[in-house]
Every structure is written in C-alpha cells, then in structure tokens.
Amino acid sequence: MDPQQLLSCISACDACAQACDVCAASCLREADAAAMARCIALDIDCAQTCRLASAAMARDSVMAALICELCASICEACAEECDRHPMDHCKRCAQACASCARECRAMVSAGHRPFQDKPTGGPYAA
Image 1 (cartoon, helix red, strand yellow):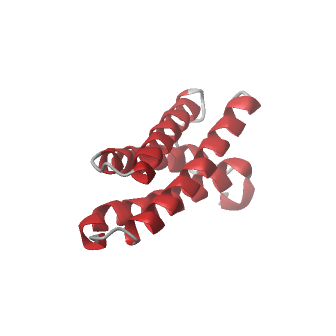
Image 2: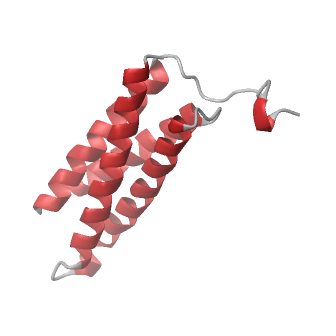
C-alpha cells in the first residue's frame, strides 16, 4: 500500500473523530437535545471507531483492514443521520464522515485485506 494513502486515511479518521466530537457536543446544546439522541449516539460510536482505525493503521495492526471496514460502515451511518439535520455542525460532520468512509474503503481495496486466518507472526501467532 502507498504510504501516502495510508497517511491520508489516518488523517481522515482523525478529522472525522474530531468532527463527531464537535457534533455530539453541539447536539447536546440544542434546544431539543432529546430529539438529537440518535445523532449523538452515532457521533460517539463513530468518533471512537475512527480513533481505533487510526491507531490500528499507525501501528500496522493485522486487524487494520477489518477495523477500517467497520469504520467505513459506521461513518456511512453517521453521515446519513447527520445529513438529516439542518445544523451546520451536523452538515460538517456528515462531510467528514463521508470522506472518512471513502478513505477507509479505498485503503481496504488497495490491498489491505481483512484478517481471514490466524496471523503467521507477531503477538497473535499461536
């Protein structure tokens, strides 16, 4: 995999996590925060998954591709939810989530396949 593509994916994950944190905090300050419960919950899930994906890629984890596939799916769900709301913080979050999902899918399709069998070396070897 191209190191620049990997760095681009890590950067997208980091930016998405930050956008999700801002969105969740902003949603909590909305007049009807209870109406934003699904958005807030997805923001939290997405931010945490993006951080996990970024860290997995940075340390070249054998699970990085699998985590990135999960990250892309959660980012897509969060983008869809955020896009339903008119607030600027939700729109910015939806954009960051969509970008992160694209980067994660590109990283996986570029050759980092999800973990299928037991690793042949490293800390997970039998």
